Length: 328
Ligand SMILES: NC(=O)c1ccc[n+]([C@@H]2O[C@H](COP(=O)([O-])OP(=O)(O)OC[C@H]3O[C@@H](n4cnc5c(N)ncnc54)[C@H](OP(=O)(O)O)[C@@H]3O)[C@@H](O)[C@H]2O)c1
Image (tube, rainbow, N blue to C red):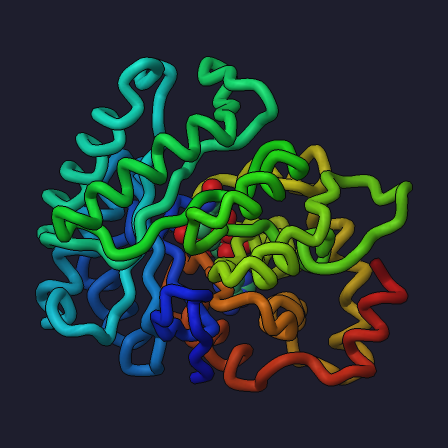
């Protein structure tokens, strides 16, 4: 397993991160023995970054992850780097700091920990603050970050970041504030615009190379939607533990269209660059040096093992990346 530095935090994280969200869903809907076995295997294979959130399974993911890590003796020491998130509702308007503090304290209780390594704002950003539509301004984010800093003083969090979803220009503004340590960025074969320039007629959200901007600003970058929620496995079939076909983020209108689009990249398998489409998708993301860790949501241990095998093969070779550039 390769390890990269999460920006200026100095934290070392595995290039493959373990997604504990509802997509994949093992830590939300799986059986506890399967969760424990898969997390243990992930750690054995060198995975050290675990990503959860207060909203995943309405706290269930945090509770399960906390219990598993405790059972494995990984709740202490510094091998595992644990990130969680705060999602504000419209009722937080006028009391952002209190709402953030309450959320972090509730997360710590569910996780059974005194501190998390990384706390992240989970809401979307927009030019104008419209919390009812889940649009939060940079000013709101700065208030959140100030609270995170206060919580650091109390030993409850170490570093903080945000989710790079919403209006791209505002996300770039947030990166430029210099007060955040990390960003979660949607980056995959279907929509690589967070990490490369795209044409004006690019059909999806243009994430305006935010990964490069974050890298230049010394921030850690956590790639999300690496498999486009599963579409980049190339099939409409879902594992029984997985969520139903998820709403695409930054790609087509519906999951079936994403699956159809994903077929364009089957050439990477046919031409012998990778064994599977999922392997190509994961290796494409880690080919970007500014990506600190690529999160993959898994439904079972087999998927985890396949994802680890993919990152073990390393970044894609230049001819494969050139083929991708021609195909996008
Ligand atoms: N900050 C945010 O707002 C945000 C948003 C999204 C995600 N995230 C984070 O990112 C994590 C990943 O979620 P995601 O939405 O980005 O999903 P993803 O990783 O792009 O896709 C996960 C899906 O891919 C399939 N899969 C996983 N491993 C596979 C393998 N080795 N071979 C073939 N298929 C495989 C599974 O589908 P099947 O089970 O159907 O086979 C799984 O449900 C989340 O757990 C969360 O931690 C954060």
